[in-house]
Length: 345
Image 1 (tube, rainbow, N blue to C red):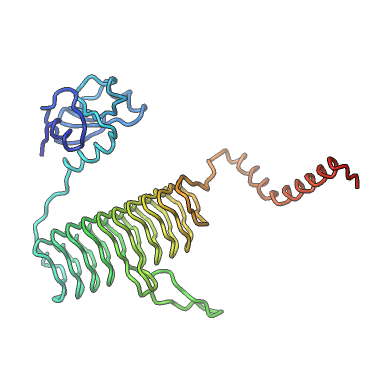
Image 2: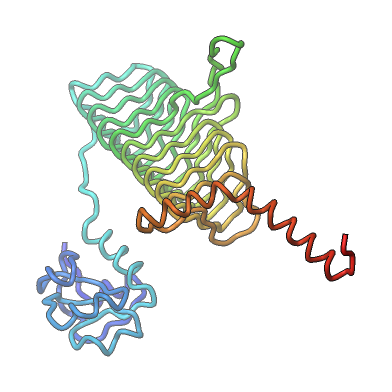
């Protein structure tokens, strides 16, 4: 599908500079774009490619407008404008409704006429699948699952019993929703499993990356709010609550009963301990360990930057002596206070 530059500008609230009648069919990077492509620039490191680009149009911030002589869309947020245009030009292909002959659908399941159930998928008893839902090949939906309208489940997604997914969600391959949480009691010699009786409830407009796992609650529910974006390979434990429009990068681990606020951003590889709270509008940098609650918005980090190994070893040796150094420093403080107070003992 092709759109003129002027039409794209209207879609993303941008201003056209140049020929608004150029037809655009795709998006591309500045270096590889052709005459039917649109590219974008955010950051000075890309300015060097502007002179040589063959893009039909380029999305620029107002501050960069004078750096490029060709047709441009001027937008306050070029990346956001690009995202909207890319979604328009590269929309997911439409699918036909129906059920593949190899799918296994329980007769007590309720499927909307416009839904598609892919090859070798399994749909359990009491499960409800809404309008325009795509269930990819090899998916497993347990009993009494609910999938609301316009959801897309890629191949090999597992949604276990009683769990619910809201409207317009995208769930990528390998995701497991509603597995048992890690709950055990120790009798002194062995671990005794605590039954996990809750559910996973996922809101509207959520995207879940490949091979992410979301455990069901032990008694209450694990809840993922509207608009949450989860990257690949994230572990979300039982009874976790994630507020609306929070974004979490890959390889984050969240322990049981943690409560994460709205509009948070959590960097890749971060670890969040259980039974703590994180306020709204918190940013946590990559690989940080959150070991206590955060009650105020802002950016938080617990990582150290990489350094040469010899320097790192010296620092580690000093870290091990911090307690000893602190005690010696305290004694020196006391001695200095005695000297200045006139106490010579």
